[in-house]
Length: 143
Image (cartoon, rainbow, N blue to C red; front, side):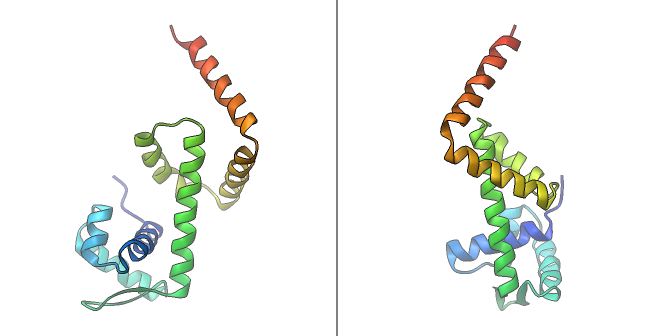
């Protein structure tokens, strides 16, 4: 199993702060299925890189830089989920795939995917044609 990256942590901290108004080490650990000690180590790295302001037992505050990066991670995650949803990928598979894709795709590819999502959203007839094609293709390939 892959360990969560700095981006995963920033996205989760951003999400928790927006949902609850705060993010605690235990909340982050539970959400990312990691040990609290791992969260503490990552918070120290994020603090060193000026994404968060972290003092043990005091809480976590996103810096302007951390807030911007957390928002971008959240938006990227949502865009990839929207894209896979448009393609008809099942929700349980979709979330696993988004996690795999978002850290292994270049910014240029993400930008191209964003353009494709926007195009398909503004041209639902094209998306319907694709989905019909996909359905016909799977019917032909089924025994």
